[in-house]
Image: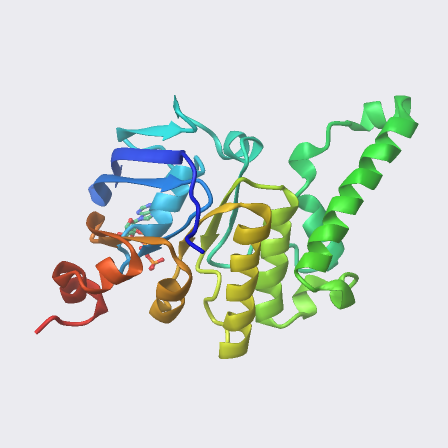
Length: 260
Ligand SMILES: Nc1ncnc2c1ncn2[C@@H]1O[C@H](COP(=O)(O)OP(=O)(O)OP(=O)(O)O)[C@@H](O)[C@H]1O
């Protein structure tokens, strides 16, 4: 059955980002539609991570417009992006290594916890109920990603592939509508990559989550993405379905190999 997509979630228009004299992104435009898996590819230093950082408010481009769910976005901080349903994972795993899997995933719910310490003392029952709700959601994510058996294990003791899965779990605990994944398969063996692919597809399918991912493994990108944007030296050189991108001479020249 053909995949169904919705409205534009985020429209990036003519984005330029500089760090001093370094042009990280130059006049980049592309959009992401509801329910799709959108990949960003390109050689090292092409501007992929910078692009994710623009989407979730870590970097503010000097030029360009960002339309998020139909509204022009002004300078937005990462916590605001998170509260609007944007969650992400990082290229280098950013977890609390000494804390258990469960507690790490729980930190993904922090933004949703309404009760402060004082509130907690005054309205103990309400805070308890809230805590139970959060735990329930976290347990659902744990079941979904099949990590029940390691829920009490300190993250630092887990193999790399599982740590990446815990990071995905933490992002999912925030119930994102737009999920940004920065090299979710980096450093994984074939089996771990297959598992991660399956989970990404399942998240997209079962929760309807829109996903933007950066990935170097071309096999994976071509397999799971609906559309791919290709960056090179901070410029967009290709955009389309995996087949379109694969056969675009500009992309082949710059990235996938050589066209001649
Ligand atoms: N905070 C920063 N300060 C200065 N320069 C930066 C910063 N972040 C990125 N850059 C520069 O911007 C350019 C794009 O970097 P970016 O990390 O976005 O590329 P990338 O495609 O994600 O690379 P990789 O695949 O190696 O992660 C590079 O020249 C990089 O050195």
